[in-house]
Image 1 (spheres, rainbow, N blue to C red):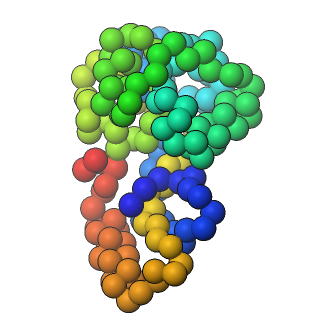
Image 2: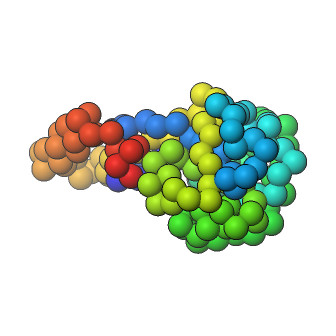
Length: 154
């Protein structure tokens, strides 16, 4: 179970899609907005994960930033979502995460949807391993995803 983008040789099935949000310090001037565009954050300091943590993901982010017309000014890199949330809460910078990350930290940060952006959670497997057990697991996971708001549950 993971988030795209992935390597090309895997089969995937989408279980859930959720909004991507700008994560801002709670007192940030944009924190009260109902929705933002990535371009609205062009002048902000950013906190992101290390570039080597997952290259396909970073390539996608680079494309998104270019399409929004800027290159982020990264002031700090941190391993993992909890660390990113702590840096945002401390006022070090802003970041961009799936809405479900709010279950990890509800104080000191504001999650504002980025218009039209979605993060998918997928089940991935190698096509050579496409067995009935994999299909059964996919059925169970898809059933759970359809019956539980995973973005609220985290």
